Amino acid sequence: MSLATSFSMFFLSFAPLWVSILFLDIKSIVEKQTGIMTEKYSILAILILSIISLIILMLSFNKKNMNGAQEYIIDSVEEEKAISAEYLLSYILPLFAFDFTVWHQVVLFLVFFFVLAFLCIRHNYFSVNILLELLGYRFYRCSLQNEDGVIVSKVIISKEWLLNRKTEKIRIHPINNEYSTDIQKWK
Image 1 (cartoon, one colour):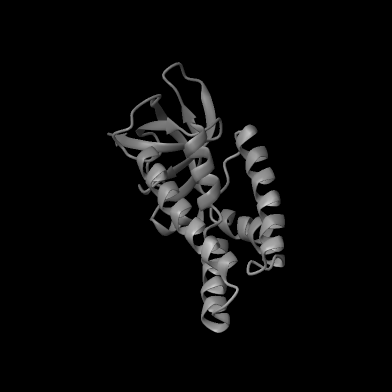
Image 2 (cartoon, helix red, strand yellow):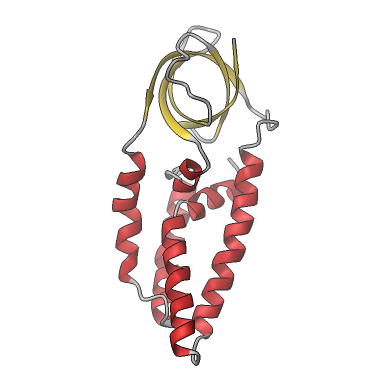
């Protein structure tokens, strides 16, 4: 996975926080009307990074992107349902401790955020992306068999309903060692 895709996935996984910050900054601008440079820069940065990250993400999840795709037979499949709630509780809620209308609090947040981003990207850690769920993707834990009969375990991110696809062939594109996206199913 490219550095741009990794950062885009990481950045967009914080979508609930970005929406909350946008709300707080807009509220602050409406109420204060002076001394609002922090809020203006924050809104601009969030909107620009969100648009760029969304474009990169959509290009990465494009079904025409066949680079590195592999064919497997689905041996077993189970939908991951609690993964988003766990992510919200573990990563997003603690970040509300920062006051995003005060510049030094924003700087502290950015230090924390970019250290976390560096560590996640360096270790090829893929965080759950709630935006993907809103776009209709589901997360499935699958045991897959390759053409040599070797069983591998992957989490597949797919818009397809995979629960009733056991023993069918599927072509997947790796995101990292654990996560993949489906390219297409073959009957």
